[in-house]
Length: 141
Image 1 (cartoon, rainbow, N blue to C red):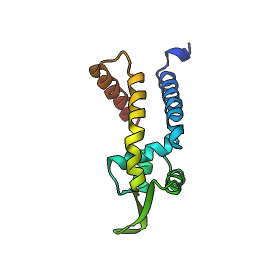
Image 2: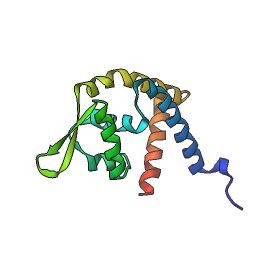
Image 3: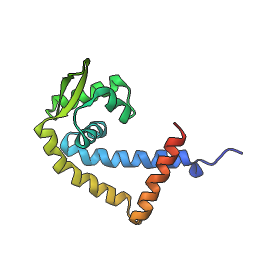
Image 4: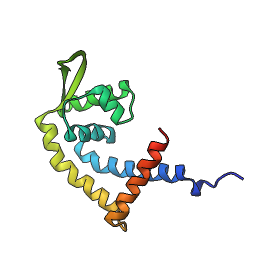
């Protein structure tokens, strides 16, 4: 007998991820950011000078897709691409001052969403949820 959709781990993850993405998209709209652009900025807020290839790997995107996303945030004046001094075929992506400053206004909105999503889960359960999801992800790689 086939597994019921409502008891499937995959379906539970899919609907939760879709709902989080929708909520995040709505909250990023006033900043003229998509969830994909936000993901690029988060990686750069954690450490600048990342290659486009590395960003693609970290964000699970293909290279043409990440190039398109970076080009859009570059046109918005939030990042700049510089030739990698060690590999002239590659670019490193850096934040502009506007890109750095955006973190201060966007992150409180993201933290508010996180608090809503984790309502009813104490810190221990939040950490356990994250650990379990990371384990499932690693098992599939």
